[in-house]
Length: 196
Image (cartoon, rainbow, N blue to C red; front, side):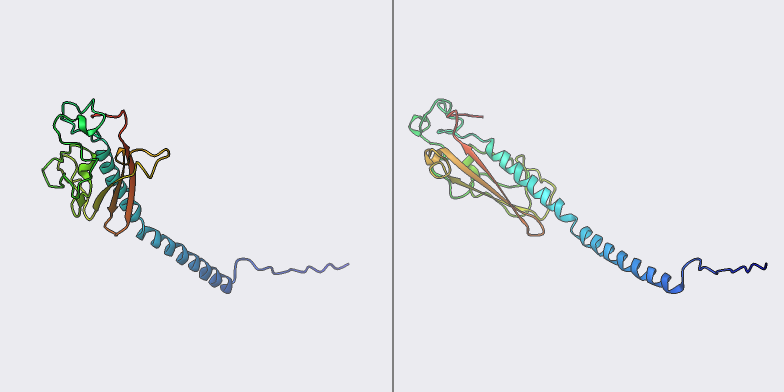
């Protein structure tokens, strides 16, 4: 008996068409991934700008809320005991009762900001370079900030307070990309005459 040996030639490897298709598919995938990475890397500075703007706003809010909030000026002999503006010995009530139209503090290089009370910051405008409370530049350029203080005792709280016993402090910071961050804090006349 005679046995016939049949050899089947199986293909090994890949054909040229399969190789070209693989290269095209991988190339398209790489273009897609690189374009996403490009967009991400272009916008990677935005979180830094936002964080710096928030840091500037938070430092201003802290500086303002740490100021005195009494019926009298903090250096008045009765500042710690007065329960109304009539009890002030200096005769000059604290300006929280009547908010100033312009800020009584400045944003100048080398000039420390000295304030008698929270309201001294009303309408403070820091248009170009921002300085800290000691008058030192904070090291950022292109940022600006504005402070607005509003009496909200009668409208923002339940039960309502005297309108001048609660202040809303709004700090608006604009970063170099013109994005705006708004931070808000409330300061209440508690204790009721706390002098820091």
